Length: 303
Image (cartoon, rainbow, N blue to C red):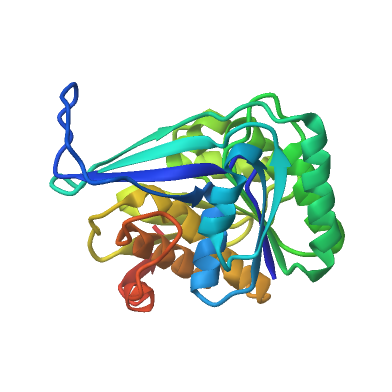
């Protein structure tokens, strides 16, 4: 089983229109809303691809029923917290290929909630083959939250993946995460290094092992502690909605780590392919059925 933790889940709404004219009114089709947040999106992709998973997340009691209905058959342990869930809105322009995302930061969560989340993970770590901690963190949360969760995996001798930002990315590195998956911007903000390779090395000096860096249209970079730095790139840029690409990439890497496969080239190829295949889907949390064919179009180089 691959266990995902989403510290700051959201109800994700996607609005599609031809082109966004800023400052003007638009008549649009009804938004499509689903339960989301990075870890939940990772669990969706894993389920779609046939992998056993469990999604753990603290969910606002006002919206718990909507989360449960939308998740359906996806195994989930939803820890109740007072109030509503945060909202995220993606505005997809079919005419231009642009996507604009408005993410609420979320509300502070009672401290005892994190005890419940940690206990839930601890109680299931024996059945877990890979732990994924992904997404933003609600304001006022413990500085050690991500690191504490990753240490449960380390203590159990299982691989862990973290998709975090800011100080939580640095603490995930210090906790010895098996794999970190920042994008270029997140990496620069956390480490102060504009060059992605220098940023990845900074995370490794802090304690991280493998670092996969999303480079947007330029593909993805894999930085191991030892050996060649690898670059993966698709033969052409895919147009679509990129909001779930990083989550799908994490799912791809986690699926291999859970099976005991730590070959850097294989991890990079699948992560890049699943991320690219997610762009072709209208909403985050799924990958296009042609993801295997997309993977065959990826070129991996050392420079």
